[in-house]
Image (cartoon, rainbow, N blue to C red; front, side, top):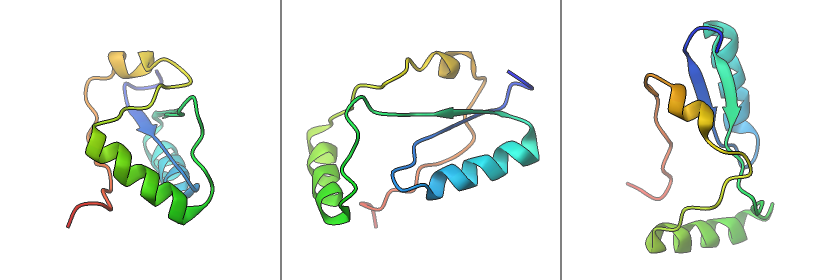
Length: 86
């Protein structure tokens, strides 16, 4: 890694990717895109319904690439925007 800063992100529509890229430019960190084996639909209503079901079931999708960069990270000072929480 460039400087031990890992920017791990998942972006369904591309908005989070843009923010991750801004963070990369500012910090010199390394980007790692988290990609599910089975891509989510591009239909917003359908993906919201699917996400609600997966959250309730505690489902964790299989990842396309192993999360090995995450194992080398010292910490992930960030957060996920949870639209399903008040």
